[in-house]
Length: 236
Length: 293
Image 1 (cartoon, chains in turn yellow, cyan):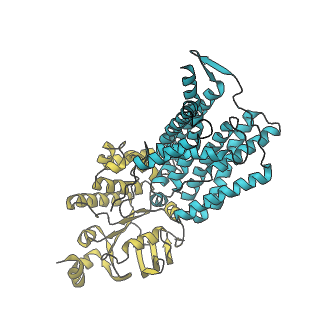
Image 2: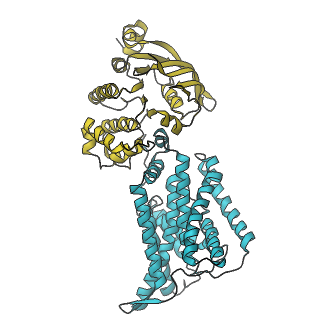
Image 3: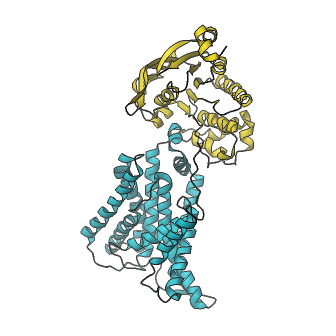
C-alpha cells in the first residue's frame, strides 16, 4: 500500500501562536484515517494547513507533489477536498448551485451526471434541489457539504468534525453514508473527530493529537483496545 | 399634468444612470466587501477615454463599445494591481485605498485632459417622441432601455454562467470557494471589471446631460450612494429601483419645491441617505447581516 498523503514535521499556527508542533502522519491510498483529540489539540488547524487555508512549515506530500505552502485553490485542484468545520455552505445558493460550485474547477462535461448520481445517493438533497441551502436542517447541510466536496472528484477528502451539532441518530446515518461513499468511490478519507468511538468505528487507522503533537497512533482496533485511549477518550 | 409626467420620466432616465453606477457599487460591495469611493472617478476617466475616441474620429457607437471594453480591463487591472495586495485585509485599509484612488484618478485626468468643460456627444441624438400628448426625449427612452439591457445581461451572467456562479459563491463564502478550487482573486478581478463597465456606461450617458469635466461624476456618485443605500447595498435589484426613486424624487423636488430648485437638489440624496440609515439601515431590498454564534 502506497501513501497518498505523507505529512512530515508539520508546523502551523496563527501569528505568534504555534498550534501544531511537528506532526507526522501518513494516509494510504483508499484508507480512512481518523485524527482524534480533545478541543484545542490542533485538529482543525491541521486540516486547514493541509488544505492551504493556513500556511504551514514542513512537508506535505500528496500524490507525488509537495503541496505545503500552495494556495488553497491550487491544492483543491490537485484533488484534496475539505469539508470545513461548520460546513461552509453557500447558504444563499440553491442545493443544486452548491453542488455546481463544488465542480466549478472541473473541466470535464460530466458535472450534470454527477449531480444526478448525488441526488440518487442523497434523495433528501434531490427533493430540495431548488431550495436555498440555508433552509436545510443541520444534518442535511452536512450531507450537502460532503456532497459538494465530492463534486470535486477528490482523491482525498478531509472531513472536519462532521458530527458537530448533529443529533446522534443523524450522525450515525451520516457516517454510514460516508462509509458507503468512501467504499464506492474509492475516496481516501482523513477525518478529524472529537467523538472517538464513532471515529474508530469508521476509520481503518487513527492518530491521537494532543497539544499539537501526535501522542498515539495505531489501527482502529488497536486503539479501541488501548488502555490509555479507553480511559482518556472512550470513557469506558 | 403633462409637465408632471415629463418630470417623472426624465427622473426615471436620470435615475437609471444613478442606478447603473449604484449597480457598480453594489457589485464591488458584494464581492470585495467595501464601498468603492473611486467608482465615480473610474467612470469619469473612462468617459474621457470615450470623448478622446470620438475626438479621434471614431463613430460614437463604436467609441462606446470600445470604452466599455477598456473600462473592463481598467477595472480588472485596478483590482489586480492595487486591491489584490491587501485583499482580505482590514476594511479600513481597503477603503482608504479607494479614497486614494479617487484623488489619484481625479488628478491624473486633470493632468491629461485639463480642467475645462467639454461637451460630450449624445449617443441617442436629439429629438422627442410623442406618447399620448406627453413629449419624451429619445434620449430618456434610450437610457432606460440601456439600463434594462444592462440589468438583463448581468442577471443572465450571474444566473447562467460559471463565472457568475463563482462570483456569487465568492461573495457568500470566500474560504469555501477557495476550498472548491475557485480562484478568488481572479473572480474579484472580473467583478471589478464588470463594475467599471457599468460605471463607464453611466458616465457616458450622463456626460451629455451635464458637461464633461474631471469633477462631473462627484455629484452623481452621491446620488448613486443614495440609490444603493435606499435599495440595500447588497441588492442589485435594489440599486436599480433605488436609482429610479432617487431620480424621480430629485426631479420632482427640483421642479415643484421652490426653495430647492436646481441649486439645492443635492440635498435630496443626502436627506434620503440619512432617513434610510435611521429608519431602515439595510435598505428596501438589502438583507441584514446575520452571524451565527
